[in-house]
Image 1 (cartoon, rainbow, N blue to C red):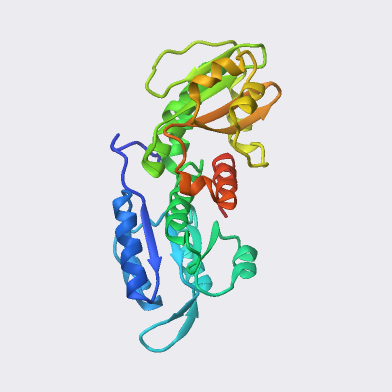
Image 2: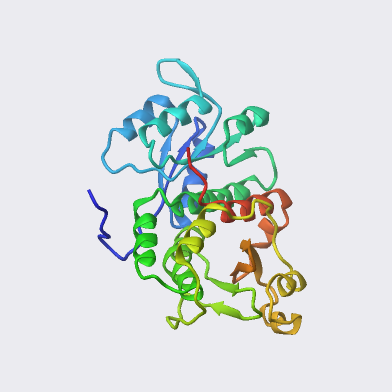
Length: 302
């Protein structure tokens, strides 16, 4: 059955937190709700499966404790339980974050979770919340998701030139999900390799540009993004984007620029204003993870 949009209003993203300690579970859920997420909390495997029986339980992100025990004293792990939940949503599986007070880092990385966060780390609560936001963004920008696939198809049918196509992608695909998942505004800087640079504001509906094959833009922008994560300083963004000087970009002091695409002279970076929270920027591991996920949203979710 062909997908058709039912509403222009974005729905809250759903987070499942499996944690057997009530005093840890409840504050995290309250903080997530304050960030605009819909939350589901469960202390054990049996509770999770009861939740999954209810209709419309599309889970975006799972936060998993590792050591779990259900009411019947059946021991299980958050790794196993996470896979059971993924099996219920095989087409667009939820992202996984491990939140543990023990050292399961190597196993967590081996199975491919988005983040491993130690409960005993001083900054763990804020790191956890930021990781949920970015994991939610990664999942909801996936072309496997019907809404995203439909939007890309609508843009592709218009046979647009390069700049206009990129503007549509930024405005209609990326920016709405950034707003819902991160709760912050963004804009885009696009350079076509000929010395022409454009600021793409999601609120600005104007469009113009040079001729370019849409198929290449669609395929490369969403499948062949650069894999090396980094955040650009002002002097780096002025070098990354052609046609604009450092003096020009100085007006964006305090903005975090994240490169999304760099291929064959075409360069696209996203600017986030207000800047990323200081407590997040202070943790280099999570800053790297943030940038990497924004640039790899098109990878196969399997």
